[in-house]
Image (cartoon, rainbow, N blue to C red; front, side, top):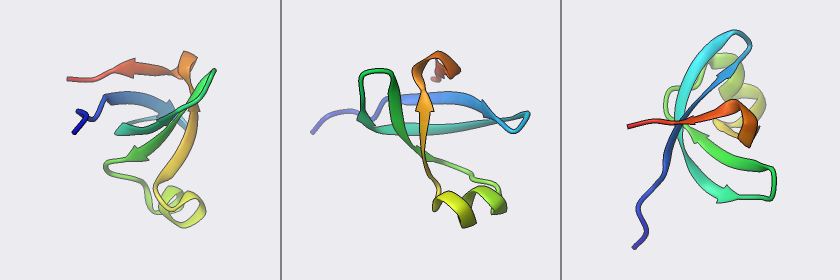
Length: 58
């Protein structure tokens, strides 16, 4: 079993944390740990985030 890689990122001027479900060439498919209600409604707590906008979280 692989370990989930946890990251943090900014979206709509807020910071979020999550883990990488799938890696693409220039982006990650991220499952957001604590999504905002708007994020959960529009994206069902899974978003594609540019690698440039992500930082590794502990």
